[in-house]
Image (cartoon, rainbow, N blue to C red):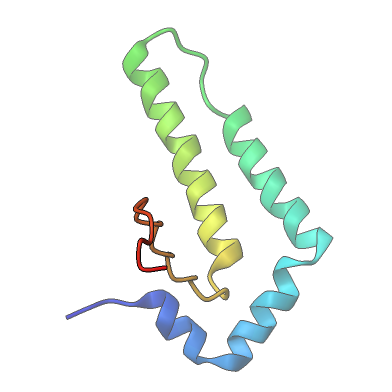
Length: 91
């Protein structure tokens, strides 16, 4: 079983259009920024390296979630093959 939530979401064109209209609203983006900042501000001050690493991972997870939330309606672009670096001697 392959789970393809992005593809499944994008099959509903009404949901995609609604989402695209939502993510460009300044109110929505302000709410996302405020939620992320609120999470950061509520983290405890610590000098323990393990707790600091856990806090960092929470911030990075929230950042990644916001990225996926904001871009879920956009189709993934295929990765272009890098040039081989070899000269074309056929010319």
